[in-house]
Structures are given as C-alpha cells and as structure tokens.
Amino acid sequence: MDDTDREWYRRTLGLTRGWTVTDVQHLLVPLEVQVFVEYVGDLSCPVCGSPGRKYDFRRRSWQDLDHGSSRCIVYARVPRIECGACGVREMDVPWGGRFTRLSLRLEGRIFRDVQTGTLKDVADRHRVHEHTVRKILVAYSDLMMRELDSPGSGASGSTRPRPGKDTTTSPTR
Image 1 (cartoon, rainbow, N blue to C red):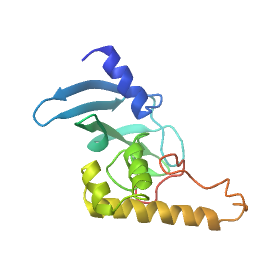
Image 2 (image 1 turned 60 degrees about the horizontal axis):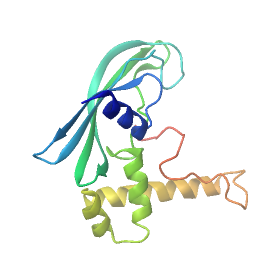
Image 3 (image 1 turned 120 degrees about the vertical axis):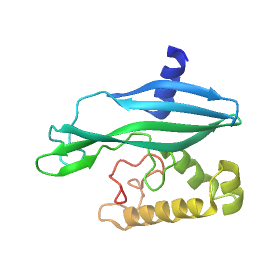
Image 4 (image 1 turned 180 degrees about the horizontal axis):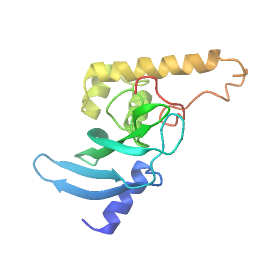
C-alpha cells in the first residue's frame, strides 16, 4: 500500500480531521478491499463536546460500496471517551451508516436503488440481506416523514434530509 491508496480512501470515506487510514489491503480470496482506519486526533465527548479522555476502544467494521467487483470493508478502532458529565460514550464515525453496519454511502445508495427495484434485487446487488434493505427503507422513510411534519419545514420541502447526508445524531447509536 502506498500513500496514494491511503489518501484515496481517506477522501472516498469522507474522513474528518483526526481520522486516518492506516492500511489498505487488496485480497484475492475473497476478492475484497480492506481499509483500516484509526482516530489520532483530540478527544471530546460526542454528546456535549467537552474535552474527554480515552476510556478504551472498540473494533468495528462496516461494509462500504463495492470497488468494481471487490467488496470493500472498513475496519476501525473506535475510541470510547470518558466525559465527566455524560459518562463513557463511543465516538461517532463520519463514514458510518445511521441505521446499520453499512457505510453512510452504501445506505444512501440502497435507499435510492430500492425506489426502482425490488428488495431482493437491491439486496443481491449490494450483497446484503433483504431485511437490511427493508430496515434502511423504513428508517429513511420515517426520518423523511418526521422532517416533513416538523415545524418550519415549509411547503417547498427545503429542509428535507437527503439520505446519506444527514447531520443529526442517530437515536440507534
């Protein structure tokens, strides 16, 4: 792996300050790209923003959009931060999906694809279970309906969230 690979995946995943790609491995069996990410920045509570200290970390993985015919898996050591006010909280990851262990980009793609295909077709295309596709469809549809029903949404619908571009914190994390 070279610096170009690391930089390409850093940009592709939309890594924010503090996150770094430490390694990229291209496997032939199974045909898969593995991207390894770590947080090396300053630590603050993901709830209140106060400075915190590292409590420990959790190893997590997310399926991302395929790269050609290769499945792409992102592996990360995600810090848990100890905050005096909020307790121990796991840091949010910028690439992580809101409702699954898929990347935000893959959740958004599935939500768009399911509008023109069957659940089974979309699940097969993205190598996920049908219940995962259903979960994404229901969750994003509910989110969009709540946004449309919220005060100030206006007739133009200008405040509707775009799947894969939401900035609020997920209630399921």
